[in-house]
Image (cartoon, rainbow, N blue to C red):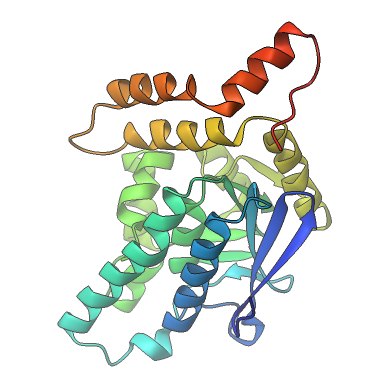
Length: 259
């Protein structure tokens, strides 16, 4: 697969890197980039070689420094609603519910749609130079790709209100204290740390990873009983080849092979 705005490469066995490549505009999200990411993720979803994805931005300055404002400046109310709806459905919800773990490697500015993209990923690592924020109110907007919903889930209602209403940026260290990112590391070590976590993930059952993502997400959905969903998914694991391999390996005192 080849795209104008993103690249995909295998970092090592089962771990793939998706890089947003619009460095001249600090990797800002436009409709074509969202479409490219959607197309790539849908294709990678069925690729058995892919077990973990890492998403990052090109260059040393930005993960994604927001939406492409030049594209939005002339939108009507109807166009704005359509943009947010399509973006959420095609990309941000797709990432949140993706059956394979997606790690955001936040390597610089993650603002507006960029922070929303990182928050949709299953967890986040940040470089020491990273800055994060949702500055949409300074443009007369609010976050439209799930930011008003995912940020309170991650940092709590009060801190989310402050970040969104002030539009202020926070440092990587503050993001770590808020629980917005899992780790902060030197930029030169960011990808190695993401790969290291990916290596730990791929030692385990891919079927279990998929079920765990579904169960955890269920607890944050309205009108869904997360405990019942966990019971359902727990039970379904007993019918999987991974369960048979995992238990057989344990009883035979060997490492499981989940290839």
